Length: 553
Image (tube, rainbow, N blue to C red; front, side):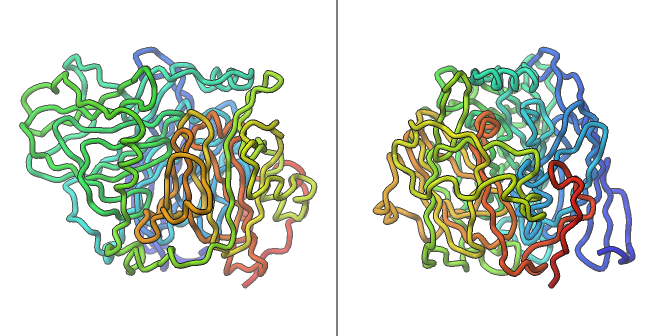
């Protein structure tokens, strides 16, 4: 990459530049991460800003773009960002989680450099350090299809990003102290739509505008901490076209359950009387419903939004049926010019089945969450660096959990230690998430997309495979698990690196409901994995060690 002449260099937005080399285009960003004071729920509170923005800036990229983001940490605590859903092919060095990266120390900077290779779709980024995600630092990341690749719908008039959050008026520091003291997070104080909640007093500025008769794309993501949020638009239906990188069968919905960490793209036609309309997001599966609103205004609009908000669905059977209605669009082109459905995942033999059962414990007054009885802690030396430098045995043990845990593991004593699974490169694996608790779960896997083939009530047994969708399950990066239910995903572990499997409920991830999948290529070749970048931050026991010999072709 170095030494190739720039052909073009031009400004494209605040803090961003576009460079075109003799390879895929480069986008350059400089981000200043600071504290600020805002009143998202009407009460002044400390928030985390990126370039003075809350939510942070939208990254608008195209398949195969190289993205270079220089992050200056002006907080008083170490900080990291992850790019949730970006596969980081051969490049877990850029994943921005504490198992792969040393955090950016206060008053210093670090430059992320990654390629959005062979991907399209709607994603989010957010902080992975402490409880920073509760204060901000999150935003939208979109990857547009290249012009040569047909998209299965006409170009919309405009393309909007909607970031939804359940929100606490306490600071991230206060919430972290609460969790560290052994207590759980209470219900949130409100719901935000792009960092705001419309008051409905006639003075609200619109978040988006629409011209009558035109079609608009809305990318809706739940960057919250805890709650599934149901999203709907007053007086309008939504045609679902994409989720987390896959074109889907284009069903029409009146509302969508967006589980924590998930993103959907919908098309909305401005075909109603010209006035204001509310976008509405409300919490699901709680006795007390919290609602956030944002205004969409027709350009020739005359009149305020109606105070009568569309009703949300009730119960999780409705939500499960909605999940079952999602189907992969088998005829659409993907990021590369081949039909999405040309990959016949349903006919591949499963080589390993891993069942992960989540549990909670307050033993000894310490609240911890676990997978298969192990509650993950991040050692001072990131796991990936320990592997690369050949000192993994000094930092963690592999495979401390069973692939097939006993059913009573949900009630067993929890062990607190790093939780790392050793996965064979290129094996086709089935992962079962089994939830014995009464609460919702949402899981995300870094480095991959997977086929979410089933979500069902009860407990999983091998006989349940006959209920799998082996034809057109959506390839995506997050999956929800309902109370007393299970979910099954299938994927090929063909991306060498170290990859985080985590609860998207951030209280649970912070207190141990996560693990790492170590996928090592036996060849130690650049064909399979990139070398440690020269600018990588080093910490823990590798800080002063000599660098290992680099991989070669």
